[in-house]
Amino acid sequence: MARPLRIARVNRVDRVVHRLRPGRAAVSVVAVTLLLATSACSSDDTGANDDGPAATGDTGSTDDTTVSPAVVDQLAEWSDRGPHGVGSVQLDLAGRRTVVWYPAEEGAGTEEPLETFDITGLLSPELQAEVPADMRVQHPIAARPGAEPATGGPFPVVLFSHGFAGFPEQSASLTTHLASWGYVVAATDHVERSLSGLLGTGAQGVEAAEDDEVLSDLLDLVALQADDPTSPLAGLVDLEHVAATGHSAGAAASYTVASTDDRIDAFVAYSLRGPEEVDVPTVPGLVMLGELDATIEPDITQAAYDAMATPRYLLSVADAGHLVFSDVCLIG
Image (tube, rainbow, N blue to C red; front, side, top):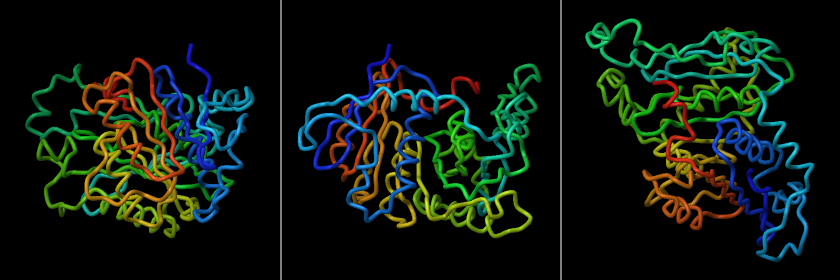
Protein backbone atom coordinates (compact mmCIF):
# COMPACT_ATOMS: atom_id res chain seq x y z
CA MET A 1 0.00 0.00 0.00
CA ALA A 2 1.34 3.44 -0.93
CA ARG A 3 2.39 5.73 1.85
CA PRO A 4 0.23 8.78 2.61
CA LEU A 5 1.03 12.01 0.82
CA ARG A 6 3.45 14.07 2.86
CA ILE A 7 4.41 17.70 2.55
CA ALA A 8 7.36 19.54 4.06
CA ARG A 9 6.87 23.27 4.37
CA VAL A 10 10.04 25.14 3.44
CA ASN A 11 10.01 28.94 3.14
CA ARG A 12 6.26 29.05 2.42
CA VAL A 13 6.68 26.54 -0.39
CA ASP A 14 5.13 23.07 -0.49
CA ARG A 15 7.80 20.53 -1.28
CA VAL A 16 5.80 17.44 -2.14
CA VAL A 17 7.44 14.09 -1.52
CA HIS A 18 5.16 11.15 -2.30
CA ARG A 19 5.90 7.50 -3.01
CA LEU A 20 3.36 5.89 -5.33
CA ARG A 21 2.97 2.41 -6.73
CA PRO A 22 3.28 2.31 -10.52
CA GLY A 23 0.20 3.17 -12.53
CA ARG A 24 -0.48 5.63 -15.32
CA ALA A 25 -3.65 6.85 -13.60
CA ALA A 26 -1.70 7.73 -10.46
CA VAL A 27 0.87 9.58 -12.57
CA SER A 28 -1.93 11.54 -14.20
CA VAL A 29 -3.37 12.47 -10.83
CA VAL A 30 -0.22 14.22 -9.69
CA ALA A 31 0.20 16.07 -12.97
CA VAL A 32 -3.39 17.30 -12.78
CA THR A 33 -2.91 18.30 -9.15
CA LEU A 34 -0.02 20.62 -9.92
CA LEU A 35 -1.66 22.04 -13.03
CA LEU A 36 -4.92 22.76 -11.22
CA ALA A 37 -3.07 24.61 -8.51
CA THR A 38 -0.92 26.51 -10.96
CA SER A 39 -3.67 27.58 -13.34
CA ALA A 40 -5.48 29.25 -10.46
CA CYS A 41 -2.47 31.32 -9.36
CA SER A 42 -0.65 34.22 -10.93
CA SER A 43 3.12 34.05 -11.34
CA ASP A 44 3.65 37.06 -9.08
CA ASP A 45 1.52 35.78 -6.21
CA THR A 46 4.03 35.03 -3.47
CA GLY A 47 1.38 33.39 -1.36
CA ALA A 48 0.07 31.13 -4.07
CA ASN A 49 0.75 27.93 -2.20
CA ASP A 50 -1.23 29.01 0.83
CA ASP A 51 -4.33 27.75 -0.97
CA GLY A 52 -2.79 24.32 -1.56
CA PRO A 53 -3.25 21.13 0.45
CA ALA A 54 -3.59 21.76 4.16
CA ALA A 55 -0.72 20.51 6.30
CA THR A 56 -0.08 20.48 10.00
CA GLY A 57 3.03 21.67 11.80
CA ASP A 58 5.17 24.80 11.76
CA THR A 59 5.42 26.35 8.28
CA GLY A 60 9.09 27.02 8.84
CA SER A 61 9.92 23.41 9.64
CA THR A 62 11.53 20.95 7.25
CA ASP A 63 9.84 17.98 8.94
CA ASP A 64 7.26 16.10 6.87
CA THR A 65 3.64 16.69 7.76
CA THR A 66 0.71 14.56 6.66
CA VAL A 67 -1.97 15.90 4.35
CA SER A 68 -5.58 15.56 5.48
CA PRO A 69 -7.50 12.44 4.35
CA ALA A 70 -9.85 14.68 2.36
CA VAL A 71 -7.00 15.72 0.07
CA VAL A 72 -5.92 12.11 -0.43
CA ASP A 73 -9.53 11.20 -1.30
CA GLN A 74 -9.59 13.99 -3.87
CA LEU A 75 -6.41 12.66 -5.45
CA ALA A 76 -8.03 9.23 -5.65
CA GLU A 77 -11.00 10.78 -7.46
CA TRP A 78 -8.69 12.34 -10.04
CA SER A 79 -7.18 8.92 -10.77
CA ASP A 80 -10.46 8.03 -12.51
CA ARG A 81 -11.38 9.47 -15.90
CA GLY A 82 -12.70 13.00 -15.73
CA PRO A 83 -16.17 14.31 -16.56
CA HIS A 84 -15.39 15.05 -20.20
CA GLY A 85 -15.16 12.84 -23.22
CA VAL A 86 -11.97 13.26 -25.24
CA GLY A 87 -11.62 14.37 -28.82
CA SER A 88 -8.50 14.52 -30.97
CA VAL A 89 -7.30 16.34 -34.03
CA GLN A 90 -4.23 15.77 -36.21
CA LEU A 91 -2.33 18.92 -37.18
CA ASP A 92 0.80 19.79 -39.11
CA LEU A 93 3.53 21.90 -37.49
CA ALA A 94 5.83 22.86 -40.37
CA GLY A 95 6.02 19.20 -41.42
CA ARG A 96 5.94 17.76 -37.90
CA ARG A 97 3.08 15.36 -37.18
CA THR A 98 1.07 16.81 -34.30
CA VAL A 99 -1.82 15.54 -32.19
CA VAL A 100 -4.06 17.59 -29.92
CA TRP A 101 -6.41 15.96 -27.42
CA TYR A 102 -9.18 18.14 -26.04
CA PRO A 103 -12.23 17.96 -23.74
CA ALA A 104 -15.24 16.75 -25.70
CA GLU A 105 -18.92 16.33 -25.01
CA GLU A 106 -19.58 13.72 -22.33
CA GLY A 107 -19.63 10.21 -23.77
CA ALA A 108 -17.31 10.90 -26.72
CA GLY A 109 -14.50 8.35 -26.69
CA THR A 110 -15.40 6.92 -23.28
CA GLU A 111 -16.77 3.63 -24.61
CA GLU A 112 -15.00 1.89 -27.47
CA PRO A 113 -11.84 3.91 -28.30
CA LEU A 114 -12.03 5.30 -31.81
CA GLU A 115 -8.46 6.55 -32.14
CA THR A 116 -5.72 3.98 -32.71
CA PHE A 117 -1.96 4.10 -33.16
CA ASP A 118 0.03 1.65 -35.28
CA ILE A 119 3.73 2.00 -34.49
CA THR A 120 4.71 0.20 -37.70
CA GLY A 121 3.25 3.18 -39.54
CA LEU A 122 6.44 5.04 -38.64
CA LEU A 123 8.45 2.70 -40.85
CA SER A 124 9.13 3.40 -44.50
CA PRO A 125 6.48 2.03 -46.91
CA GLU A 126 8.97 -0.62 -48.05
CA LEU A 127 9.53 -1.88 -44.50
CA GLN A 128 5.82 -1.69 -43.67
CA ALA A 129 5.14 -4.04 -46.56
CA GLU A 130 7.36 -6.63 -44.88
CA VAL A 131 5.38 -6.63 -41.61
CA PRO A 132 2.66 -9.33 -41.52
CA ALA A 133 -0.81 -7.89 -41.00
CA ASP A 134 -1.37 -9.97 -37.86
CA MET A 135 1.72 -8.38 -36.28
CA ARG A 136 0.55 -4.80 -36.75
CA VAL A 137 -0.80 -3.79 -33.36
CA GLN A 138 -3.57 -1.21 -33.44
CA HIS A 139 -3.06 0.36 -30.02
CA PRO A 140 -6.35 1.86 -28.78
CA ILE A 141 -6.42 5.46 -27.58
CA ALA A 142 -9.40 6.67 -25.55
CA ALA A 143 -10.25 9.59 -27.81
CA ARG A 144 -12.56 10.25 -30.70
CA PRO A 145 -11.12 12.13 -33.70
CA GLY A 146 -13.11 15.28 -34.40
CA ALA A 147 -15.49 14.83 -31.45
CA GLU A 148 -17.76 17.71 -30.52
CA PRO A 149 -15.80 20.01 -28.17
CA ALA A 150 -17.01 20.32 -24.60
CA THR A 151 -18.79 23.39 -23.34
CA GLY A 152 -17.64 25.20 -20.23
CA GLY A 153 -14.27 26.30 -21.58
CA PRO A 154 -11.88 27.79 -22.30
CA PHE A 155 -9.53 25.11 -20.99
CA PRO A 156 -5.84 25.37 -19.94
CA VAL A 157 -3.16 24.11 -22.31
CA VAL A 158 -0.59 21.37 -21.72
CA LEU A 159 2.32 20.89 -24.13
CA PHE A 160 3.69 17.33 -24.12
CA SER A 161 7.21 16.43 -25.29
CA HIS A 162 8.06 12.76 -25.95
CA GLY A 163 11.32 11.04 -25.05
CA PHE A 164 14.25 9.90 -27.20
CA ALA A 165 13.00 7.55 -29.95
CA GLY A 166 9.48 8.47 -28.90
CA PHE A 167 6.45 9.86 -30.72
CA PRO A 168 3.49 12.12 -29.90
CA GLU A 169 1.26 9.22 -28.77
CA GLN A 170 3.85 7.58 -26.49
CA SER A 171 1.98 8.62 -23.32
CA ALA A 172 -1.58 8.79 -24.66
CA SER A 173 -3.06 7.33 -21.47
CA LEU A 174 -1.70 10.41 -19.67
CA THR A 175 -2.56 12.98 -22.32
CA THR A 176 -6.12 11.72 -22.79
CA HIS A 177 -6.59 11.48 -19.03
CA LEU A 178 -5.65 15.14 -18.68
CA ALA A 179 -8.02 16.05 -21.50
CA SER A 180 -10.85 14.24 -19.71
CA TRP A 181 -10.26 16.56 -16.75
CA GLY A 182 -10.44 19.72 -18.83
CA TYR A 183 -7.06 20.30 -20.48
CA VAL A 184 -6.17 20.85 -24.13
CA VAL A 185 -3.06 18.68 -24.58
CA ALA A 186 -0.81 19.12 -27.61
CA ALA A 187 2.07 16.84 -28.65
CA THR A 188 4.30 17.08 -31.70
CA ASP A 189 7.06 15.04 -33.32
CA HIS A 190 10.55 16.15 -32.28
CA VAL A 191 12.01 14.70 -35.48
CA GLU A 192 15.52 15.56 -34.29
CA ARG A 193 15.26 12.67 -31.80
CA SER A 194 11.93 10.91 -32.43
CA LEU A 195 11.49 7.35 -33.67
CA SER A 196 10.31 8.56 -37.07
CA GLY A 197 13.24 10.95 -37.26
CA LEU A 198 15.74 8.24 -36.37
CA LEU A 199 14.16 5.95 -38.96
CA GLY A 200 14.37 8.71 -41.54
CA THR A 201 10.64 8.81 -42.24
CA GLY A 202 9.65 11.88 -40.24
CA ALA A 203 12.41 14.41 -40.78
CA GLN A 204 12.25 14.88 -44.55
CA GLY A 205 11.88 18.57 -45.34
CA VAL A 206 11.60 19.57 -41.68
CA GLU A 207 13.81 22.41 -40.51
CA ALA A 208 15.80 21.36 -37.45
CA ALA A 209 15.16 23.30 -34.25
CA GLU A 210 15.92 23.16 -30.55
CA ASP A 211 13.36 21.36 -28.40
CA ASP A 212 12.16 24.50 -26.64
CA GLU A 213 11.72 26.28 -29.97
CA VAL A 214 9.57 23.40 -31.20
CA LEU A 215 7.38 23.60 -28.08
CA SER A 216 7.02 27.37 -28.44
CA ASP A 217 6.02 26.87 -32.09
CA LEU A 218 3.55 24.22 -30.94
CA LEU A 219 1.92 26.72 -28.61
CA ASP A 220 1.74 29.21 -31.49
CA LEU A 221 -0.04 26.55 -33.57
CA VAL A 222 -2.56 25.90 -30.79
CA ALA A 223 -3.21 29.64 -30.57
CA LEU A 224 -3.83 29.83 -34.32
CA GLN A 225 -6.23 26.89 -34.13
CA ALA A 226 -8.08 28.59 -31.29
CA ASP A 227 -8.80 31.51 -33.63
CA ASP A 228 -9.83 29.30 -36.56
CA PRO A 229 -13.62 28.91 -36.64
CA THR A 230 -13.27 25.67 -38.62
CA SER A 231 -11.08 24.01 -35.95
CA PRO A 232 -12.44 21.94 -33.04
CA LEU A 233 -10.14 24.08 -30.86
CA ALA A 234 -11.94 27.30 -31.79
CA GLY A 235 -12.77 29.18 -28.58
CA LEU A 236 -11.69 26.16 -26.52
CA VAL A 237 -8.23 27.26 -25.41
CA ASP A 238 -7.15 29.28 -22.37
CA LEU A 239 -3.77 30.69 -23.39
CA GLU A 240 -3.37 32.43 -20.05
CA HIS A 241 -2.77 29.08 -18.34
CA VAL A 242 -0.14 26.93 -20.06
CA ALA A 243 2.00 24.09 -18.73
CA ALA A 244 4.77 22.08 -20.39
CA THR A 245 5.38 18.42 -19.62
CA GLY A 246 7.55 15.69 -21.03
CA HIS A 247 9.38 12.42 -20.47
CA SER A 248 13.17 11.91 -20.38
CA ALA A 249 14.54 14.05 -23.23
CA GLY A 250 11.08 15.60 -23.26
CA ALA A 251 11.42 16.34 -19.56
CA ALA A 252 14.50 18.42 -20.33
CA ALA A 253 12.52 20.09 -23.12
CA SER A 254 9.69 21.03 -20.75
CA TYR A 255 12.24 22.34 -18.23
CA THR A 256 13.96 24.42 -20.91
CA VAL A 257 10.84 25.94 -22.47
CA ALA A 258 9.65 26.89 -18.97
CA SER A 259 12.85 28.93 -18.79
CA THR A 260 12.81 30.43 -22.30
CA ASP A 261 9.11 31.10 -22.98
CA ASP A 262 7.33 33.40 -20.54
CA ARG A 263 3.94 32.04 -21.64
CA ILE A 264 4.66 28.83 -19.70
CA ASP A 265 3.18 28.93 -16.19
CA ALA A 266 4.37 25.53 -14.88
CA PHE A 267 6.18 22.39 -15.95
CA VAL A 268 6.02 18.68 -15.11
CA ALA A 269 9.17 16.67 -15.86
CA TYR A 270 9.17 12.86 -15.85
CA SER A 271 12.65 11.26 -15.47
CA LEU A 272 14.50 14.55 -15.71
CA ARG A 273 18.18 14.95 -16.45
CA GLY A 274 18.77 18.64 -15.81
CA PRO A 275 19.84 20.38 -19.03
CA GLU A 276 23.14 22.25 -18.90
CA GLU A 277 23.54 25.93 -19.74
CA VAL A 278 19.85 26.63 -19.21
CA ASP A 279 18.58 29.17 -16.74
CA VAL A 280 16.59 27.61 -13.91
CA PRO A 281 12.86 28.16 -14.54
CA THR A 282 11.18 30.53 -12.12
CA VAL A 283 7.72 28.97 -12.52
CA PRO A 284 6.40 26.06 -10.39
CA GLY A 285 7.83 22.68 -11.36
CA LEU A 286 6.96 19.08 -10.53
CA VAL A 287 9.65 16.42 -11.05
CA MET A 288 8.72 12.73 -11.07
CA LEU A 289 11.01 9.70 -11.10
CA GLY A 290 10.87 5.92 -11.08
CA GLU A 291 12.79 4.50 -8.15
CA LEU A 292 14.25 1.70 -10.32
CA ASP A 293 15.10 3.90 -13.33
CA ALA A 294 18.39 2.60 -14.77
CA THR A 295 18.39 5.01 -17.74
CA ILE A 296 18.28 8.28 -15.82
CA GLU A 297 19.08 7.19 -12.30
CA PRO A 298 17.09 8.71 -9.43
CA ASP A 299 20.16 10.51 -8.08
CA ILE A 300 20.46 12.39 -11.37
CA THR A 301 16.84 13.50 -11.24
CA GLN A 302 17.19 14.35 -7.56
CA ALA A 303 20.17 16.58 -8.36
CA ALA A 304 18.17 18.38 -11.04
CA TYR A 305 15.35 18.88 -8.57
CA ASP A 306 17.69 20.19 -5.88
CA ALA A 307 18.93 22.87 -8.30
CA MET A 308 15.41 24.07 -9.13
CA ALA A 309 13.86 27.26 -7.88
CA THR A 310 10.85 27.18 -5.60
CA PRO A 311 8.00 26.42 -5.63
CA ARG A 312 9.09 22.93 -6.59
CA TYR A 313 7.66 19.46 -6.12
CA LEU A 314 9.18 15.97 -6.19
CA LEU A 315 7.37 12.64 -6.54
CA SER A 316 8.84 9.14 -6.82
CA VAL A 317 7.07 6.03 -8.11
CA ALA A 318 7.92 2.84 -6.21
CA ASP A 319 9.16 -0.26 -8.07
CA ALA A 320 9.12 1.64 -11.37
CA GLY A 321 11.62 2.00 -14.18
CA HIS A 322 12.24 4.57 -16.88
CA LEU A 323 9.19 3.82 -19.02
CA VAL A 324 6.54 3.93 -16.28
CA PHE A 325 5.52 7.36 -17.58
CA SER A 326 4.83 6.11 -21.10
CA ASP A 327 2.70 3.54 -22.92
CA VAL A 328 5.62 2.18 -24.96
CA CYS A 329 5.44 -1.32 -23.47
CA LEU A 330 1.72 -1.52 -24.29
CA ILE A 331 2.01 -0.06 -27.77
CA GLY A 332 4.44 -2.78 -28.79
